[in-house]
Length: 312
Image 1 (tube, rainbow, N blue to C red):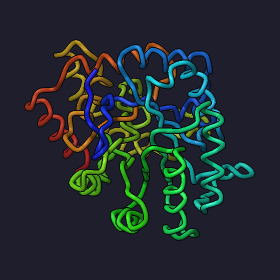
Image 2 (image 1 turned 90 degrees about the vertical axis):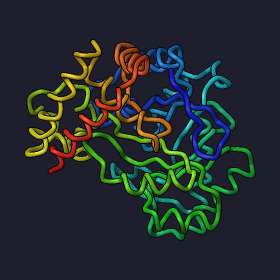
Image 3 (image 1 turned 30 degrees about the vertical axis):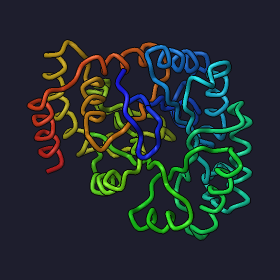
Image 4 (image 1 turned 90 degrees about the horizontal axis):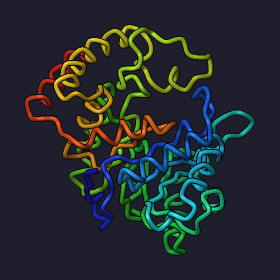
C-alpha cells in the first residue's frame, strides 16, 4: 500500500479509501451486508486505513455497516462521513442549518459506534442556509471533539473561499476519474492551497473496471443511470475506445483495467487518496493489488492522450 499526507494535516493516509456508497443498498442492485463487511476487512488487511461513508448512503445503512466493520478496530482506521443531505419522503433534501448539522453528526456517530470522526464533510452546499451558519456548526463540532478535520464536497472555488472565512477547510472531496475531469481546474486550485484531496467516482461508477463491454440495462432506479454519464450513448462508445488503450497497458503489467485506472488516479500529484467502492472481498483484493506496481511516465502520457481523444 502507498501512503500520502493529506493536505496540511499530519495524517498519513492510504492512497485508496474504502468507498461505501453502494453498501447503503439503495440504487445499487443486490447488496449483501456480510460481503460488505468482509470487503472492508479485506481492504484494512491490505493496508488501507481510511473509510468514507455518509448519512445519505442508504439513509444511514452504510454508516451502520461501517460501524459494525470497525468495531474493535477504531484506533486503526480513519473515518470520514458527511452531513447535509437527508432523505425525506423518498426525496433527497439539502439541510445544512446549524441545528440540523449538529443533530446529523450526533446520529452518524451513534451509527458508527464512535464518539468522534476524523473527517466530517458538508456533502453539498445548501443555498437556503448561509455559509456562516453551516460552517459555525462545523467549528462547534470540532471544538467539541466530535470531528477532527473539516471537509466540503461538491463546492465551487467561490463557495470554498466563502466557507473558509468561518472555519479552516482541511480536505475537499470532488469527482475525478478518466471519464470525468470536469473538476480538474478546481482540484488543482485546491491542491495549490494545501487542502487535501480525496476523489470520488474514481472508477466512473464501475465502467473503468472493464466489466461493461456492451451497454448495460440497469433497473430504472439504478444510481449509475443518473449520476454517471458514461452509461449512455454517445459517451459509452467513446469510453469503450479508451478501454482498448487500458486493455493493452493492463496486459503488459499482467493486471486488470481497474488497477490501471486506480494507478492513473492515485499517481496524479494533486490527488491524495481515491475513494474506491467495493462490495466483496474479490473486488477489495484486486483494487489493493493495483498499488503493488505503478504506471510509467510514457504510460501515463499514453492514457492522457487517449482521454483527450475521448473528450474530443
